[in-house]
Length: 87
Image (cartoon, rainbow, N blue to C red):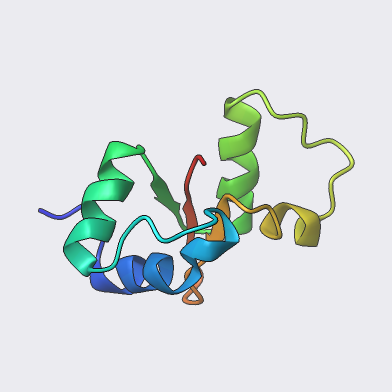
């Protein structure tokens, strides 16, 4: 079973420049390989994005929801899910 579906992979391909200065993937297969290697995760809500960063030791206190979602590492899949990629 694939960890990342085509919607997530296409989102990453389209928006990868928000985190990387040059493309790291050009095809769905390359995107999937890159995301697997970088241990990217898909979460289902803003609350899960916040929990992810808190678990990673990032101080989220006082951060506004829109600030969290504007982080370069957070990709809005636009179906309610978020892709988090460590840069």
